[in-house]
Length: 236
Ligand code: PXP
Image 1 (tube, rainbow, N blue to C red):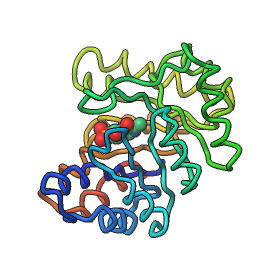
Image 2 (image 1 turned 135 degrees about the horizontal axis):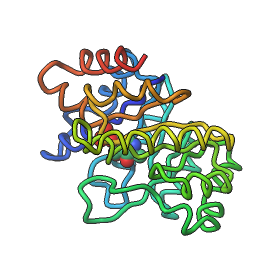
Image 3 (image 1 turned 90 degrees about the vertical axis):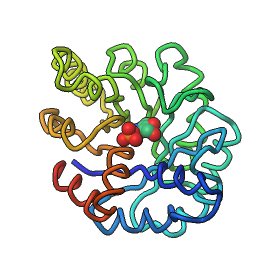
Image 4 (image 1 turned 30 degrees about the vertical axis):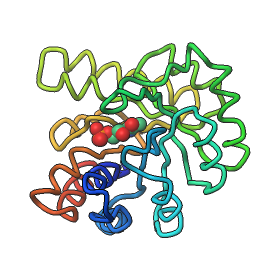
């Protein structure tokens, strides 16, 4: 398994004072030097953390891959087509949410999703759909032309250590198996930390885990090199 590091919360900290510190560009560089195989950023419609200039710079400075998380918004699609990240991950977005809540409803809008991602695929950018580990969502995703799904691990992460952990874990395992049988490559992420990440090894064939909050939080105490390195070791 590979580790994609989400650096959004370095930008959250930077924006708290409106200046340039800490640098998301430097954070990406350190993450890459310590085991990240890609860098993820979510260019939200309200630009609450990552800003346009961040992605325009990252695309030039990254040594690995840029995975751009984005909603189905025309202005963000335009930016994606201009900078051409290695991949985009389509996520649902609500203005008032603190973080991405739940997966994209691909089953309820399969045609709309297919149409939205078509120019992105035509530009040679890999498309991943961030969905809940649910049979209908996986089957619908396979019909859109997207090559990847990213399974939302938020509920599993929340239920980790409780009597609901197993049910949530099995949803992930079964969805990954179904997706792979339909020709999709499977990533996972959201809410993963240094404890609950270990069970991801029980899901065969997972390609990459995208992890942000727990790594940036640990980095406050241990430094970013150690935080990335330890996570990379756990999932290797
Ligand atoms: N994957 C997706 C699609 C996300 O939206 C997020 C949060 O931005 C993550 C992964 C990373 O989640 P976390 O910050 O909880 O590790």
